[in-house]
Image 1: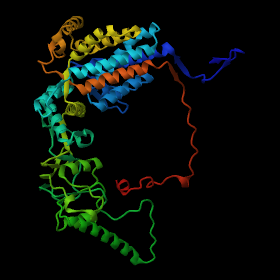
Image 2: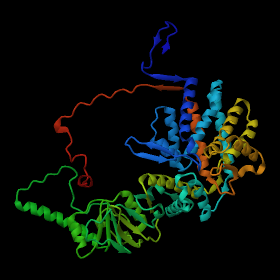
Image 3: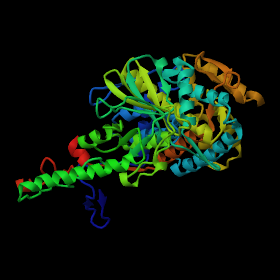
Amino acid sequence: MFANPMRQQPVMVLQNNTKREQGKKAQLSNIKAARAVADVVRTTLGPSSMLKMLLDPMGGIVMTNDGNAILREIDVAHPAAKSMIELARAQDEEVGDGTTSVIVLAGQILQAAEIFIEKRVHPTVVVNAYFKAMEEILKITEELGVDIDVDSEEDIKKIVTSCIGTKFSHKWGDLIVDLAIKATRTVVRQSGKDVEIDLKRYAKVEKIPGGTIEECTVLDGVMFNKDITHGEMRRKIENPRIVLLDCPLEYKKGESMTNIEMSNEEDFKKALESEEEEVRKMCEHILRVKPDVVITEKGISDFCQHFLMKGNNITMIRRIRKTDNNRLARVCGATIAHRPEELQEEDVGTMSGLFEVKKIGDDYFTFITESKNPEACSILLRGASKDVLNEIERNLQDAMQVARSVIINPKLVPGGGALEMELANRLIKHSKEVEGLQQWPFKALATALEVIPRTLAQNCGGNVVRLMTELRAKHSKEDGIWYGIDGNKGTIANMKEIDIWDPVAVKLQTYKTAIESSCMLLRIDDVVSGMKKTKKQAAPQPEEDQPGPDEGHTFGDERDG
């Protein structure tokens, strides 16, 4: 509502049902919402963390202590809380680990700013102090980073074990660690100084309920949930010649409703013969390169199956996913052909040692393994139930992302809250050099970093006050940098001796994300939320305009199921 100074007549700019918060009230509301989100995941930090059980709208159950997985399932209304949940997603996509830390840290940093907002310190002063502190934090973290040898299996294992140590699957020891390292090393592609590790596309996790956790393995090849198209085809072929296609091996279908008018009874026969001739030509082009296995993303007609099987004994698989086909091309060295007539000898994949179709449970799975130099892989997970498998998959994805981060940026820093405590100690000393009012928010952010070791101490049931006092005393000495909280025993320990490490890439991303997002939320001084306009109902379509059952599905693949 705005008033005209001449007439003092109020002018309504916003609708009556609009809710508006301004200035200090909006900032304190955002801080409160951020703290509420941080409190949800606070108990899931560290090796002695608790699990959360969440029910999704479909009635399914999610049991996890992964910060991103928990917040992904929670439906929140407050805009600041939604922004906080986005942080966990961004952290997960960027480095895969540290999703809980980033939320807890962002909540604490905002809480540290609350006292300044209440005392009418301008948010810009607080934000500028936070950015100064962030520059200092990033510089110190880079300095403290310890270089490791990426080719050393022991060094990589050390860091991935630290990552898995806080997860549900740590009780299976080295199993998940070995899976993560093997899968990550398989998909590494190096050209000069550039390293490409695309885990999302080329390391596929296949979960099959049943069996035991010990049966989990990384295949030296790929597997996918498909069976052969005909029962008489070979189910096991050694050193197969594999042809990959992304076109249908059947007669051309019309893109939409196609009508053919026939005036003679011979016309129908001619149409069938021309279709048969077309398919026969395709088959002859394929037979030219003498394959043992033909795999296509589209359909295969019965006539084509008969022609390729009779006398040539070729095994066929149809309608595999595009992503599976791309992985398969990397594993067996084949080139995906778009038309059978374009096939050349060099397009045939010969790098795999074994093609086999096995039945596991109720489903048939195709395995193409024993590859000489695979650049893609499938990770086979077995477990008692779907809940266990889903949690192991989440843990494995985190471990693979950590291995990827370390290979790209091979630097480590001490874990267990040791780095945060050291940063807090150095920033408090540095705050004396900061001039003016900015000194206090700078110091407050330093104190906020202590939330990580404090939360670790709380979650393992230790005496928080005594542990934090001892830890501060250790870090005030020169050689105290390596001391942090041992989350399993609830005591102070030397992180170097017990091998608890964090990748520098994960820590840098955590601090950048937490501080930048806190600054963004502090700079909001007006929150306007109103009712959405109801959509006008669309006029009903006349019957002749309504799509038929086959329209919309223009491609043969869609129509044929």
